[in-house]
Image (cartoon, rainbow, N blue to C red; front, top):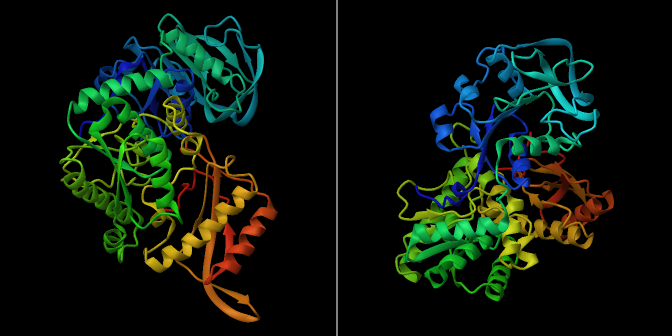
Length: 517
């Protein structure tokens, strides 16, 4: 299905993923250097990799040993394809093995901060101190570099902690330059990008220019519908498309009954004050709740919501937008990755990706499909959107449905909505709202025994979830002060009948996800 491919106008560095914990971080670090990057599976055929005309390729780390059965590999011809390569951790080991070096156990694994000694006259480490702290996470290591490579770094336990062959454009490091625990790591990435000749043109301004051109080329003079949720993603997507085609755009806000308290009114008020695009509101709570009746599986729930969104938009197009054939969505790159992109594992089907019906009438326009959340915010600022929209906490398209474990009913929605309002109110009062990436309440499908007024209760627990993050690909639980958590718990139990217990989720991502479903 065609989408807006403005990213194709930029020099590209491909990040080949071998199951790394930090593959997304590598891609983000490259983009922070104003070079477009994209994650691809190690199973991607070489011809497909080269068809994307990358100026450089980065081989990620990974959990396997290069000697393990079914260890992930890449087509060995990539090392002689003439495209500069940087191998990180597993990527360096694989490069060494494929080119005639030797990988083995050095007798001492390295995990965490390690002192690294490097050659300051090398291409990769130029301008860096001879001794520095790096972040290691490995059992195997390169013990002999391939012929033609110069060893440019070592640690006490790893004799070949970095090597390079600048003539062939091949570089490798055993440590992780992409993580903040390696203070000079960005300098390694910048040195590699310089060796590729990549142009630093991936900026908010250039992204807008390329996107506007791509949108105009895709839709021509056709009518376009935009699914507006009120969140930053759909708001920026709407602003970007309106910048491109003006009055051809009609925005549709679907009040599906799964929103937070007062949210529908807030969206209409905020969008009406800050957008020139036409806005239509569709009241659709009954039809969504009907589709969710009896549905308890998280994937089935997301797909039911995604399907009903499309059907609602199709009806709105016929009634309000002259049978618009294009639908704008605020799909982001993390949505694509988590929904299973290429050979990547499906973590959860985002309603706007994996939940779309196959017989959909629309052609999608997705101008943010290749952006991370922080990039979307910068584009929104560049387009002049107000701060309260650009920096609003993310809210999932399926709304409270993915925060209710089990079946979604009106009664359970009312219960969660009331508790969630208190959580957000107390965090706002404590001045923590901008420090937290996302905060909300979850209603599990269990009950617990309690005591209220000297009587036994058998009520619902509420779980408070709050995380800090840069792009939602990884996240850490927010360290909310105990007194704030106490105020939340007291208010929820006192003010929301049926709730008798409040818990706080201290799980990071991974292993958990931010949302519970």
